[in-house]
Length: 204
Image (cartoon, rainbow, N blue to C red; front, side, top):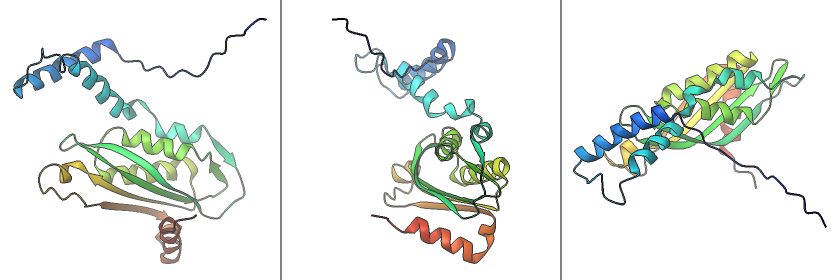
């Protein structure tokens, strides 16, 4: 009996060695300046791990969100609202280099073109995986969809918690920041209310 080897999916992470080493050296200096022993067993590999983690958390700089959308455009005569809600958002506050995280709710009204649904969360990641502020992130997502699809309107709402508010400074653990941005049809009160109603409802 011949057993055929099955090659399953394998995720491979690749990092530029030179960049990783440079970032790791900086982390090593930071850890040392904080008063920790950089040669202690539990800390010894931390600079390299942190360097790789930071590169992953900011890998959005290497992605082109506009091209992501344009790679999956389809002609379709559908002119009703399309909503993708509860998209997980993880980003890095550029002011304190601490995470902020939450959910994005996005809608657009097609004008002859629709986009593959998975591409919308992908562009959220492409913009979020950078040094960011929530306000700019919201506008970037909206502008990208508007440019790629030229729809009748785009709506973006992001609700996020910021660790810079929860772990330091004001230390308000339950605070949530909401930002929104609209174009076209969503600037009309009726359409905007329909969108808000859709993202507020929890479907069973």
